[in-house]
Image (cartoon, rainbow, N blue to C red):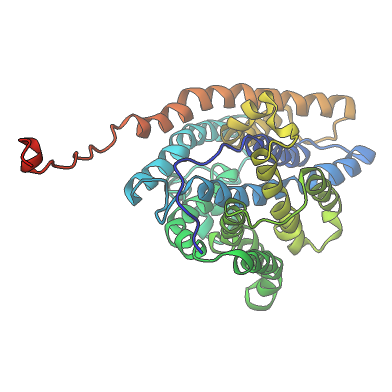
Length: 386
């Protein structure tokens, strides 16, 4: 049976803290990729940091989960129409994104000044600027386009597609309950694992990575999984391990993903354990169970994780363009360098979150609610007629 409407969704602060962790994983893989190191440090980085791009998969599942958690009734958002829902999604991501895109353009200009020969990938041109501004770059199969001016923004192109699909997916999935909904969630995990095989059988080899890793249609499997998981938790039908066990399973899964075939490792490698971790964290909040992810500092950093995600790669690539990547850096230089990029990224992200992202989200809240006319009193009652 469909879930019963509720006035407001309980807060799930652990999910905000986990957003910080996922953003940190993505930062780690980019720092590892752009700060050259050799020997044992390279091997250790390969184990601990190279799988960090799987944090994007976590964000896609989490996106479907939190949108569903906030939704009530049959509509796409609590008490709001489609127009207000899409306006909210636009204000949530676009103003901060435009500022970050501007920083990426400046980064390309700096790169041209420092290294005019080597800085040829993803140049600012009309095509890349247009696809980036309209967030449609992920629909193009060539990496020069989908990496665009800001290489992390292809994931926002996916998010835009997810937002468009949510008013269709949510009412469809909320009709399911209990075992049917659980089987749907399991089926979505299975489909995610099968996508690399589907790509191998039916997609041109030149476009298989794009099909599995970038295309919004295929990444939408993770978003739909998030919807199903949130419905299971919200209805009380979730049956899964607690947060400590789910966290341990995710960490173990993360540490072995580089042993998997590359096509599977890129997207579906942690999908099953992500599907355990997010509901476990939500359930820990609902039951007041212990959760390190509710620490105020982690929540603060998690709140700014979107802004951090937008700017961190620009900070890393600009810094390394200036410093140079023609030689390996010793560990005593590479580690402080990476930590420095982390600090600078948050030094940029926190004001971006506070001064752009948060005020933009408040714009919709400032609109006065629609006035509901009071019920008319029958004339006989107004004049006291019995």
